[in-house]
Amino acid sequence: MNKSLQAWNQFWFASRDLRSLALMRILLGGTLFLLYLSRQEVVMLFFTDQGILPSRLALEVIPEFYRPLFSWGFWPDNWNPIIHGLYLLGLLCFTLGFGVRMTFFLTWVLHISFIQRNYGVAFGADLIGGLFLLYLSLTHCAVKYSFNQLIGLRHSASVRDDVVSNSFYRVIQIQLCVIYAYTGFEKLKGNTWWDGTALWSVFANPQMVIWDMTWMSHFPLVIVFITFTTVLFEIYFPVLIWFEKTKRAFLYFGMVFHFGIGLLMSLFSFAFVMLAPYFLFLNSAELDRIESWFHRFQRITKVR
Amino acid sequence: MFQRTSKFLLSLFLIYHILTMVILANGSSYLGRSLGPWLTPYANSLGLNTTWNFFSPDPAHTMYLRVVVRFLDSFSAEKKESIEFYVPPGKEKIALDSGERRFLYTMRFMLLDPQRLETVIAPYFCREFPEASEVFIEHILEKIPNLDSAHVSGASERDIIYANEGPLSQTVKCIPEEMRNLNE
Image 1: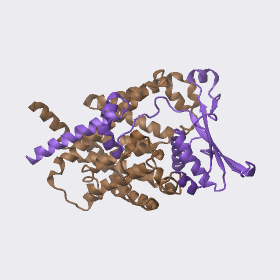
Image 2: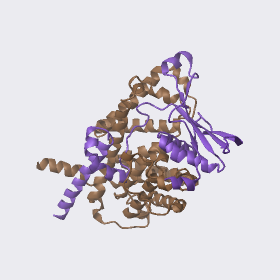
Image 3: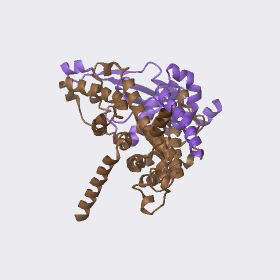
Image 4: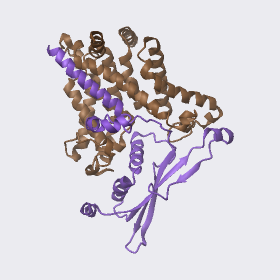
C-alpha cells in the first residue's frame, strides 16, 4: 500500500524540469497566435450577428451531448472584434512568457468563448490547442525562457515542487496519449483503414492535399504501408512513449508524421499543436542538448 | 498535514478529470451513457467532450455546395435573374486561405443537420441578398474511386452524387428577420 502511494506520489507530484513546459508554451502559444492573427479579419463573419450565426443560436446549434451549460462569453456580441484583439494580446504575452497563471487562464477563457460562439468553425487545432492552453495555464510554464525571467521576476524556490503545476504536466502527457489512442481506435471502425487504402482517399482528394497526388495510384503498396503505419503509430504511441527504449523512435516518427500532414495538407497549425507536448517527454539531458544547440546557433548568428 | 490534504484532494480531482477524458472520448459506449450525467456538464464547459475521429471512420470524399438564390414575386414569376455560386468558390480545389477553409468547415457542420440548414445557412444567404425570396442549397459529393479501380483505369473518373433529393439539399423561403422572430 505504502509503495503504491509512493508510486502515485512520484508519478503525479514529483518535481519537473520547467524548461520543457517553457518550450511547449512557446510552440503552442506562437502557433495559436499566428492561427488567430489570420482569423482577426473574419471575426465579423464568424462571431457576430452580422455574420453566419446569430448569437441566440450559438449554443443551440451544438449537438445536445456536447452543449455546455453556460457560455463563457459574458460580453455583448458586438464587442467580439475587440475581444478577439485582446485574446491575441493574451496569446502574445503567453508565448513570450509575460504574465502569471491567472492571466493565462483568462486567455483560455477567451479561447473557449470563441469556440462556443461558433462551434462549427472550430478546427481540430482549436479544440486540442484549447485544452493544452488550459492545462499549461495551470502550470509554471513562464518561469524559463520568458520575459518574466528576463525582467528578473522572482519565483519562490518551491516553484519546482508546486503540486498543481507538476500534476498538470502529467495531465498534458495523458491527454496527448488519449487523443492518439482514440484517433487510432476510431480508424479501426473504417473499412478503408482496415484494407489499407484509406490514405488513397486523402491523396486523391483535391480538397485535402495541396498537390496532385493521384500518381500515387501507381504505388499501391506504398499507400498500404503508410496507412497501416499511421494506425499502428496512433494506437501504440500511448503505451510505448513511456519506455525510454522506444520513446525516441516514436517522437521522431511523430515529427515526420505531423510535418508530413502539415506539408501535404497545409495544416501546419494542427501539426505544431500536436508536436508542442512532445517536449514534455524529454529528459533533462535531452533538454540540455536543445539548449546547447540554441546557444551554438546564437553564437553563429552573433559572429555573422 | 496541509500538503497531504491538498495532494489528496488534487488526486481525487485528477482521477475525475482523467476518467472524464477517457470515457467521453467514447461517449456513446455503455460507460459514457451511464456516467455521462456526472461527466458531461464538466467536460462540455471545458471543451473536453470531443470525439477524436480525424479522417475516421473513413476519410471524407470531395464535397461542396451549390447555392442558387432566387428572386420571385408573389406569383412565383422571376423578378430578377437568379444568382448561382459554389461554396467554396473553387469547388473541388483545396481552400488554402484559412478564412475560406473555416467557411467551408462551418457550412459542412451546419449542413449535417437539416434543421441547421433551415435555421442558419439559408437565413444567412437570405440576409446576404436582401431581395431574395428563396434559397436552394444543393449538397454535392464527388466520390473518389477506390484504389483498385484507380490503379487500373486512373483516378480521374469520379461518381458525382448530387444530394438534390433528401434533407441535405433544400429550398428554403426567405422570411424577413422580424417575421422569423415573431414566428419563434
